[in-house]
Length: 79
Image (cartoon, rainbow, N blue to C red; front, side, top):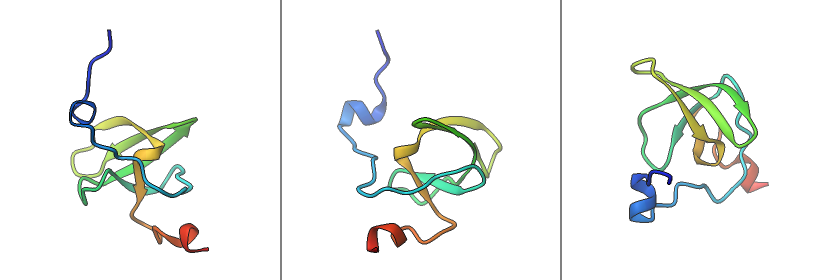
């Protein structure tokens, strides 16, 4: 049995509609909210190890839910 997340219960889709190269050192946010910001520490497959820049807590996040905030977000999509 797996636990349901808030997103699963309410059918919220956090995946972005474009490809973006997320790598260690990037500043990202997850989902449509502007905060909190996370620093990407490592990426493996479809998961990223991220650290909250406000309180230092570490989390695992799906790369598809991460959105860069230190680069042009639609540079690849515009090409």
